Image (cartoon, helix red, strand yellow):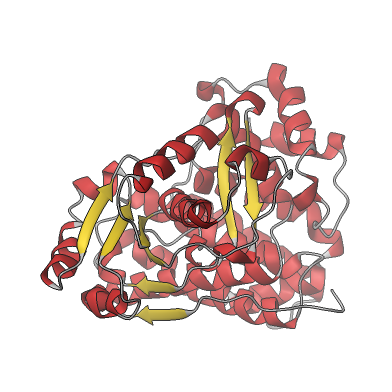
Length: 386
């Protein structure tokens, strides 16, 4: 556990059913008249933009919408979206959607105020010196927790790898957590994004960067998600479960901002970068096997996680409690019907070395894992997924 730690947090959080109805008052506090909404086609098609757009326009605020954020935005695509936003007299960025839209919105905001090239940021050749223009983030999935992190993930196609840009300058000014916006989520997306949120919390709790602040949020996130993810999956209109999931995802994001993810994410990035497996899905299928790999050095923490998940560990030794937690992860994957045919995606034994090579480059996360991960270890974990 780190000796020195800090908490990075959102400026303001507005949460609860129908909290989106306060969007005009929130934006008015920033004394802006022109905003750009960044979203994706799925959110647009679901009709989730219509209400906030109308509320803002009724308040005299001009709204420009960019709705073509791709599921896995590349460096160049984010740069193009930024150029599109520059064409308007933009004073505030509103990101509405999943992690890709929110990460893109964060990047566009800081690119407005920092004279840097996005590729230089990705390569670590430039730094963000100023906060961006004001931002409001509205998640419509309960997974990435991107609304609470100083991170933004982009795809670098030539390296077939996702890369994280990290800067506290990207922390949002305001976040709206409205569970009503998530009730239309398809079951598969509910499962994948929910497992992604659980993954964040568990990884941050066992990370070498874990600390009392991150532990507080991580354990609470685990508790909220564990008690509600199955209900949210089976009963999509259950607002209480949806609210638990949104809060759990955000608390997981706060954990990331204070601690860090580990080997699950490191191994996940190549699956998304080259084979375009959705981020939440790749994390979900990796989580149980990576945690099983970490078992011998994480027994006490896994016991804590078991308690947070509501697992009955009465009379269990620490090891037995930890193993029960692992069993619960595997059963959770089954209950949520989380599956991914890697061979159908073109992943087989012949490409394992490519995956290992790519994952080995993600030292920023591998170094946080509580147990050293060798290339052979990575190879074995990937093989289990085939």
